[in-house]
Length: 146
Ligand code: HEM
Image 1 (cartoon, rainbow, N blue to C red):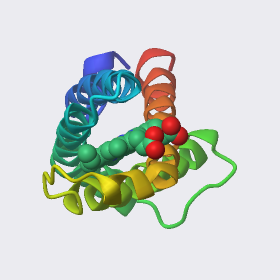
Image 2: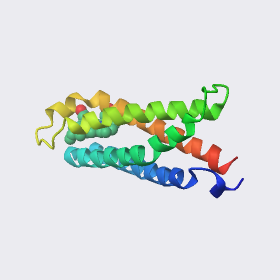
Image 3: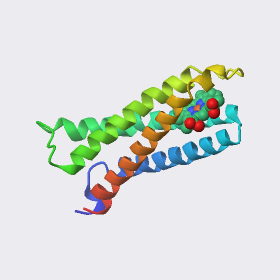
């Protein structure tokens, strides 16, 4: 079966490209935080959350529903299924935490509440990187190597 015969190849590729753009924003956001430009850090992370939300709702949720609705049960001996479930869980947690972090900021110039969320930001960033890594691995295994 060729790449283009696989269902969802085009939306999956679009989603991968968006996720890689999100990764660039996350790294950039972290670098500018280290340069103490906290407001620009917040705006960059807001952009990453919006892009992530767009790819989740436009591509990932529809393809997940279409792909898994045909299954009667999850085959946990299939590593692709297990990877996909971890990817979905990490992406969902990231989405909720990211929306909460940027949503509770309100573009305030007073950043005291942001400073208090440092540990949650760190956890969100790590889980987000894991989600992107798992998504890229899934794409490689499913669309490039099989
Ligand atoms: C999805 C959203 C966000 C992510 C993933 C994120 C990620 C991070 C990370 C990884 C750090 C470094 C933490 C560490 O050094 O251990 C950090 C620090 C920080 N972030 Fe965010 N951030 C987000 C949203 C925001 C928002 C909306 C603001 C508000 C302006 C903000 C303000 C800050 C500040 C002030 C720090 C420095 C905390 C300190 O060093 O005490 N962040 N963030």
